[in-house]
Length: 435
Image (cartoon, rainbow, N blue to C red; front, top):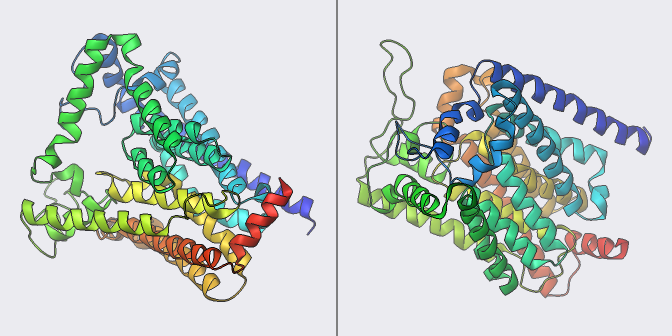
């Protein structure tokens, strides 16, 4: 098959998958099951001055900037607005995928058509899930990828600003501060602070400074204060759909509900192996978070390292995975940035051809594919899929990618410091020559 035919095949695959996503999103919106529609009362409360946080079972989960972002779509009406929101996110999904390809270097040519198809298919499920759920994760993911794109082009202030805007939408991109400190990018740190400040304060231009401050304080009391004060975990944290460290460890180590009973007479199910109290669990959870952060810090590329080739992609892939692990709630459809580590490992797989790097990249991809695939009801059935999620299949897959990407980055960093050649170094040189 000619290169042109292979490229055409990738485009056709993209069109088909986009149509599938659009049809499913429209169907779900028609049933009133999209988060975009579920948040309609919150949008009304935001503009009318009513309480937004601490209302009902949970309250609105993110800062007001997200409601401001969705406001133009709500002018179209409920279902048309939800469908337009889904189309917007399909566009963001493909932008994220194509930017991930480009971050490899040489416009993604090093992946080849087969590599791009592999990345698309392995990443499609969480991308589709977020489009159909009508959530914010693709928007947040796009800010992280925009930060990576700016970082690779040595625009540190802009890279930090994108991460800061992402943090104002959903706190976890603030973890980019660790990346910027590791790289000794003070312009990036300033950019992150500036972006976060703009994102948090922007709603004040529409609802007033006092109202905006009240909303930010109420959000803090709803989302951050309970864990910081050591309150017991609730169902939103421990339900099987939560694939963060907090969710999986909470299910396994505390007396908690993993799968709530659905329907009359159905009993709640627990999968706990231990019954730690709040204090003991906090120690374990903080230790696990500390281990993630330490591994991230140890595996990032050395400061002042040239940013072309896979170095930037690998670093931001680790950052994206750590964001998911450390978040209080990471549902399956939050894993939209799996495309970054998957793209990195596919590029390594093609560049290494053989040897330890090849085997490590292959092992990470296979483990991730099996773990994520095990949560499909088509394979295990509805109950089996719920149990797989209860034991943290998405988290396990993410950790497999995290370890594989981190070890490859660290190994490549050692080779660079020793002046040896490596697949990543060769790719970086080729990318530099091409640019």
